[in-house]
Length: 342
Ligand code: CUA
Image (tube, rainbow, N blue to C red; front, side, top):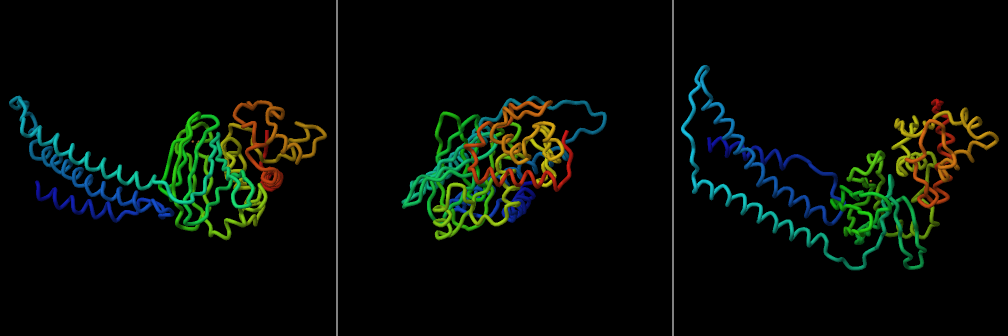
């Protein structure tokens, strides 16, 4: 039984280490976290396999024959065995705790010349504030853009409920709690667009609270940083940008829109707005109607729907340019898809 356990453990460890558990390592801290995970696997897999081997062997070997109703002698305990099975887990857990602590200390250590970014969480989008620096004015945006190989300090604040800020490719994560400022340090080490997700159930749009962290070269970052408050890194395609804003600002959490692949039914559907807008807001041009619905939702309520779920501050959350992009996108996407609104 012990030999089987050993062989199965070795196979289990090989399989566990061969599996690609995580997204690419995009920060200097990722290596430390992934190595800790591997160490944990090497310890945990043999224990799991050994326990299962003993359990399965015992079930098979000592099962009762049909009709055999005899009971075994009562067991009164075995002090030596009990000491051993308490001591071994105690040592393992203590060693892992100390090792994790050392890793956490090194990940959270202060780095020289960090860029400090305020992260503001709100149902259901992230907002980022860059302070003035080296001639560039302060900047507020829903696009997280980071220079490669420069340490970042995120200060996390929530405007409503508990959220959790997570960039899986960086391996760092922290709850964002109303009334408490939390903090994360990381150093992006790989260019690309890495998902930013909310990992605390925060309401109906929780699953749509996703944006991305774009890690770019120092020159690209400086250019983006100096551009106007609403500028989006290489704003190439307005339609794509509109679609991204639609998801990033949390619209998809409540509204259906075929072009954006959104099918939620909490808020009014957004297909075919050109057909319904004239009766809802007589004499108001479609663009203006869409704009008011976004920035002043309490005064543009569609009958049958509650305005409660719609954030009232998209005016501050999005830049004027982002609102323009979103309005243009909605007007076009709503017509293109020919979806119907009630
Ligand atoms: Cu914010 Cu989930």
